[in-house]
Image 1 (cartoon, rainbow, N blue to C red):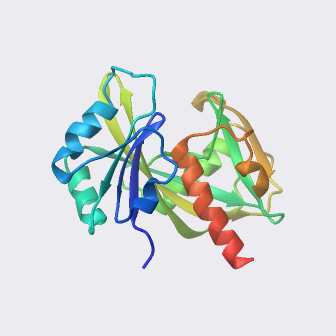
Image 2 (cartoon, rainbow, N blue to C red):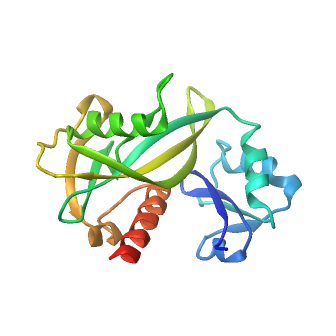
Length: 213
């Protein structure tokens, strides 16, 4: 069985719950915590008092999924969905939103399932409409403040395929200034300035693509 790891990002820091220390490799300013410190640590991570450093809290447990689900039960979790879209040249679709590279995604509407929401968001934000949706790649989690209220978002990510022939059109009212196809290697370069959660889900896709090539 592989490594079980759950990450909730807040800005450049994260709360990480995993069954092995390998999940914390490379994390700066890492503090190990016990089960009973999880909410206190998350409050420190998301507090408005910034230390200027990215704080990371790590909890090791033989049952990370159980602890993670219990943690989420204490918060209202907003559901979102998005797509990792590949064309026939094995290029990945990316958008620039509010100055950062990102993937098309958005909130799931009432009475809408994850797959339908993922397709709708990709079409609305990029202008593409010839899409085939396939496997679920995984979920990402991040916290942020909206009107001074802490929000926790769970985003469900799906792999999609496109003929790549449709005209790309950024949804400007959503802060999107650019939509483009890029070679997979580009997403490993420093030019791809994005969120940690987006890097994580793209890494999962790249591993799957390499395994299938």
